[in-house]
Image 1 (cartoon, rainbow, N blue to C red):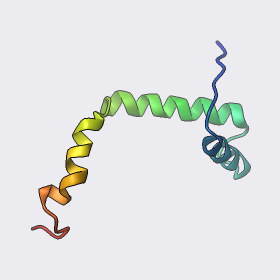
Image 2 (cartoon, rainbow, N blue to C red; image 1 turned 180 degrees about the horizontal axis):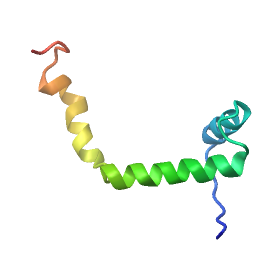
Image 3 (cartoon, one colour; image 1 turned 30 degrees about the vertical axis):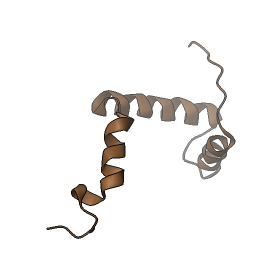
Image 4 (tube, rainbow, N blue to C red; image 1 turned 120 degrees about the vertical axis):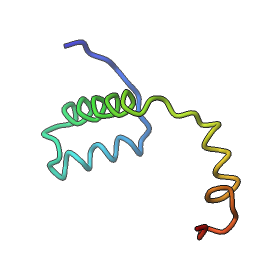
Amino acid sequence: MPKAEITVPEHLEMQIAQLVEKGEFLNREEAIEDLLSTGIKAYKTSGPVDDDDEAEFEDDGMMGHDDEYVF
């Protein structure tokens, strides 16, 4: 299996370590491999997210209205 070296932010490393400690994965290597695989599958299913489209909705409130309860 090919090997890759990556650098991850400290908060991600801590989350991976917690998953291993909780017994979700046998070890760090398995956790990273499974999480990457799951992320790639999700990416293929949903496709890339265009951050510009999301920004439009954030500024306008829910459904383009300031009130959260629009019916």
